[in-house]
Image 1 (cartoon, rainbow, N blue to C red):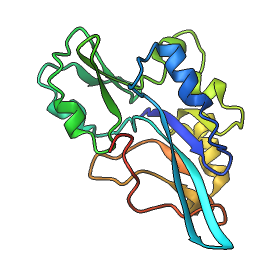
Image 2 (cartoon, rainbow, N blue to C red):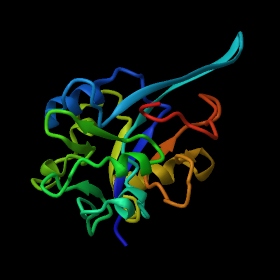
Image 3 (cartoon, rainbow, N blue to C red):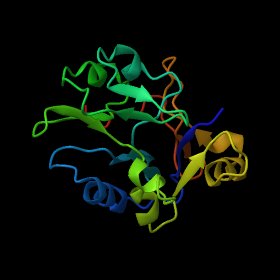
Length: 198
C-alpha cells in the first residue's frame, strides 16, 4: 500500500512560520484561510524545568478519512497514493467535511465558496518536486514521501527517530498518516492536541 504523507521533526522546528508563508504563496491561499498552521504548545512545567515546542498542523491524510465518507458529491476523495484531495468543481460548499474533520484542517474559501485544504502541493509532485512547505523549511524539519516505503525520506526519518519518539494526532478510527518526531527531553506530546481552528 502507498501512503504519501509528511513527517515533521518537532525537535528541529523553530516556529519560524516559513512553511505557513510558503504554503500561502504557492497555493494562493486567501487571508484568514490556512492549509498549514504552526501552533505553540506550552510552555508547560515549572520553572526552571519548562518545555515548549511548535506544532505545524496540516491535513492528516487519514487512511480512513471521515471527510471523504460524509461528502455528498464525491468532491472529497482519496488518491491511489493515499492523499486526500478536494475536487473544487464538485464541491457545493456544504461544509460537511469541515465538521467531520477531527483536526480542523479544512477551510471554507469565502471567495470561491468551496472547501479547501492542504494538497501536499500535488501540482509540484507532478513535476517531481516536494511540497512548498518542505522546500521552505530552513530547519530541515519536514520530510515528504511514502510512509510505507522504507526507502522514502519520510520512512527513514521515522526509523531514525525510534518508535518511542514518533507520534500522531489522536486517532478516532480515521488513522491519521502524518507523523511527528518529538523526544521527551524537548517536550511532552499531549494526548489531546489543539485543532488548527478552535
